Structure formats: C-alpha cells, structure tokens
Image (cartoon, rainbow, N blue to C red; front, side, top):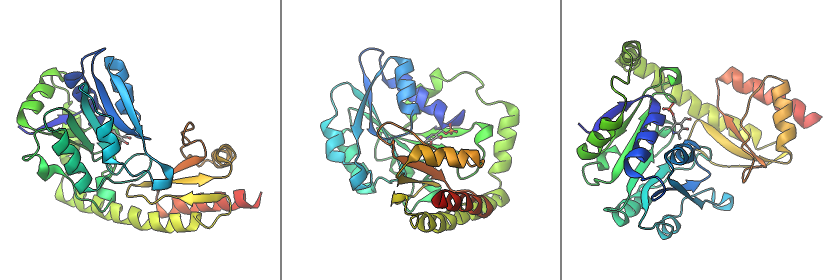
Amino acid sequence: DQILVTRGSSEAIDLIIRTFCRSGEDHILTPTPAFSMYRHYAIIQGAGVVEVQTLAERDFAIDVDVLLAACGAHTKVIFVCSPNNPTGTPLPRADLLRLLDQRRSQSAVVVDEAYIEFGDEQSVIELLNSYPNLLVLRTLSKALGFAGVRCGAVAGAQEIIALLSAIQAPYALATPVVECVEDALDDDQLIIAANAVKQVIAERSRLMSAISNYDFVSKVWPSEANFFLIRVDDAVAMMNHCKAHKVLLRHFGGELADCIRITVGSQSDNDTLLSVLNRFAKD
Ligand SMILES: Cc1ncc(COP(=O)(O)O)c(C=O)c1O
C-alpha cells in the first residue's frame, strides 16, 4: 500500500504534481540545475516553478536554508534529486531531515533516487514511516539498464499513494512489461546488475582522473552518479569534435554553457572517448 508502480519514474513525477498542485495557484520548488522533467510536468499542469540556484563553486551542494527561505504557502512539492542529475551531487541525510521537519505539514518532499545505486548515500526509503510528507522515486532505467521497459515506482504514505493511484491510467503496465520486470528483478539478474554498477563506479574514477589531465578541462566535479560534469574551454568545439567521431555527450547550455556531462560507459566505450579526446587535445 506504500508503493505505486509507474511507467518510468517520469510518470510518478507527473502524478505527484497533478495531485498536489492546483493550476494557476500552487508551485513546485527545486534546486537548479536539476532534472528537466520536474519543470516540464509543472508547466503542463499550469503550476509555477520556483528554482533555487546551486553554485558551481560549492560543487552544486544544496543549501537547505536557502531552499527553506524560498518556500511559501503555495509550495506544494519540493523535488530533490540525490545524487542529482546533471551534477552528481548527493543531498546529505541530515539536510534532508531538516527539510522534511520544517515542511512537515506544508509540502510533499520528493527524493528522486534514480541514481542512488552509484553513490555512497543509502536510500531514504526507511524514513517513510517517520515522515508522511516524504515520497521516494526509484527507477529500473539506470542501474538496472532497463530504460526501454518504462518502469519505476513511487513510495510514500498510504494515503498519498492512494491519491496517486486514483489518477493513474487504469492498467498502466502492459503484461510484457510486467514479465520483463519480473525477469530483471530475479536474483541472478540483480547480481549481474550489481556487478555492472561496481564496474561503472571503477570506470568513473578512471575516466575522471584521465579527463582531469587535459589542459582544456578546467574542472571535474565529484559525482555519485553514472555520469559527471566537467568545465571546458570551448564546450561547443568539444561537442562537435566528439559528435564527428560518433561519441555523444550532453551539453545543456544556459547556466551550464561551459560544461559537459559525460556518462560513464563500458571500459571500451570509455577508451574510445579518451582516444577521441586525445585527438581533440592535439588539434
Ligand atoms: C533524475 C531522474 N529522475 C527520473 C528520471 C526518469 O527516469 P524513468 O522515467 O526512465 O524512470 C530520469 C531519467 O533520465 C532522471 O535523470
């Protein structure tokens, strides 16, 4: 009764905003940069979006005092992604507890744990019984590599889960999806997935230290996700060079105009990236 299975955790984000935010009256609050779908679904619902800037010079750490100061009577949902996409920054548990306590009867606090398996922080799921305003998002898309199956979940207080369930489309998950998910959650498959996560974590440190040696890279931010963010001299030139060599990275523009997000691949994918970057460094 405390879990709703959804079509990816994206559907859960949509359901939460539609449940809590009245169009034209309420808003969501989220640190930025953050996963773009919080804003996307808020706009579709006609809800406002209040964004609280995190600072590159503080490694994009969330300042809970700043977040709390930005809250008002119409702040109905606070989204915190930990580790965050696209920065890889986790929210320490003590900070989350303060946020949950201070907004206990005023806002739902959604902790998006899409990348939790790649970091050191433990899931906050066991806090659910102490904090009725906490919702936790999980997905099969990242550590389990099942993005195409479109399956995620939201965990929370029974009353909230009942509300979310009431507005979810009936029979949301197709039978082949359910069968695929049952296979993915089989013990043997979970061991394979856990080993793959270990490999990504090891490759992440190898790639980060190799990339920090290039002269055109001025900053590599720490990350607890399966990607990391770097600051480079000319992001557009680097993106174009990589694309021309069939390596796709992510450039967001805006406040991250001089940054690129690199997703950690297999050992051979990462070797390919490094050899493409070696050529970029020589040009
Ligand atoms: C932080 C975060 N949350 C949620 C999602 C949604 O994942 P899905 O809908 O595939 O479960 C993503 C996907 O990129 C993400 O980065």
